[in-house]
Amino acid sequence: MARWYGLDYRDRWRYDADGVRRLTLRMILVRVRYLPPEAAIARIEDPGVTWRLEHHLLDDLRMIVEAGITHKRPKVHPARMRAATPTRTVIDPARQRKLVDARRRARARRQHHEEG
Image: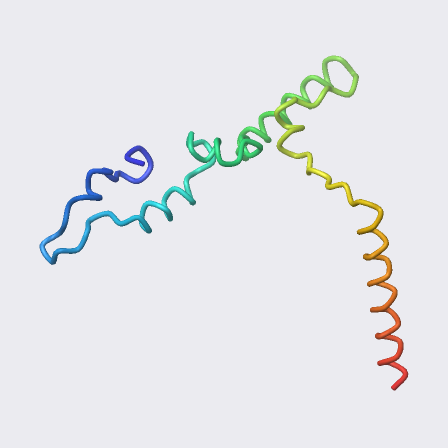
């Protein structure tokens, strides 16, 4: 945290003139939660978010140049695919039936409400 915020963790046990801790657990939590994506802890917490805007722009340029040279569609960089691909959740058939039934009931309620 010293690199990003200039904090010294030893301040956790130091007090200011009024007897208040110089660094509280909440202060640490907030700063860790909002670390930039290139911080090591942020990459451990969310490994899919590794590319910043500059990385995406440079890869776009690489793909344009490669397409101009080879006259073929260039391959997408593997790291970009990981960052951009959403994870799909598999819904089991019983849950799917419940969702369909709930939507049907909601549609019937709306129609009943519109009719008066």
